[in-house]
Image (cartoon, rainbow, N blue to C red; front, side, top):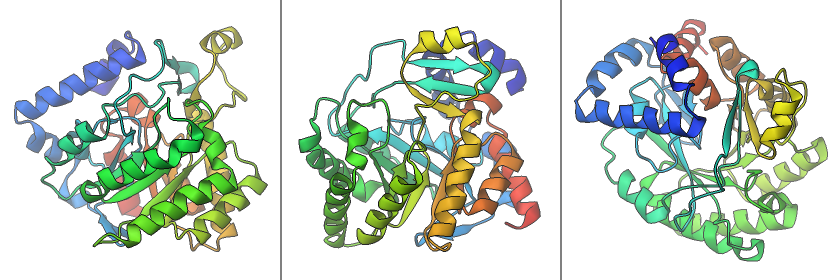
Amino acid sequence: MYKIIRPVLFLFSPENAHKIAFGGLKLAKKLGLKPLLNSIYNPKTLKSETELFGLKFPNKVGIAAGLDKNAEVYDMLGSFGFGHIEIGTVTPKAQPGNPKPRSFRLTKDKALINRMGFNNNGIEAVVKQLKKRNNKLIIGGNIGKNTLTPNEDALNDYIACFNGLYDHVDYIVVNVSCPNITDLRKLQDQDSLELILTTLDELRQQKQHKKPVLLKISPDLNDLQIDETLEVVEKCNIDGVIVANTTIRRDNLLSDNNKIDSIGNGGLSGKPLFEKTLEMIDYINNKTEDKLPIIGVGGVFTPDDAVKMLTAGASLVQLFTGFIYEGPAIAKRINKIIRLLQM
């Protein structure tokens, strides 16, 4: 079915296609179609519960941050067989993001380039949506700073999002690696990163229930930078890492160079990121002696991709671009193979 729908959606810009798809999901919910979708895409026979960070994930396949920024359709996405949904990136105040156009397809590469810029409705609106939760789907909250907040004040934004989301999500993800916010990635430097993560860990210790805090890292880090990041992660009691965010690199793409140049800046996601993500997962897993939980995201399009990521050391995988290109049945296909292989 999606093979018929996708060419129609791809007639629209990525951002407009996203709005159309979300509108369809909201309509399906109003029409009471969620149980039907569950029966088709999320049969109980494919349940493969995985315990990680003290949480019980229904399966190993999730949706990455960036798709459901404002927590509008997480329950409908769960009906497609995803075991967890990561909402956000959420900032304290609502913001429109970068000027349009800001999202572009590279169909030959099965990739996207985006410079959305943390467009979202702000913490209050997102919390209002999350209060509607009524199922066991695991929800993560990805947090960042507002674009207009200077880096020297960024800590306050992360604190505001952390405190605002904490009671409404199952885990928190700190995003300092997105390439689409001016100077944000400077917060990956050891001192800045340690200040943010230490503060959030101290806040967490004051909460009644301890929830996992993860760090999303960039695929553009070299080995030395990865090592430094892992030192901070250990020092600050961070529970795991998400590997990886989008990349600023444009290596070995099939798309026309003139088209790529005309698009300009932005984070690349999708199939071209897969090998680099796999390499980073393997490196981090070996460096930490399989002791640091890793969620792998970047270029997962097939069950074989997911299996390779899990074999390399990821405990869970997430999809974003793969979901857009492959459609709602992708989680079901991956879960079938994972269940068959007893991974």
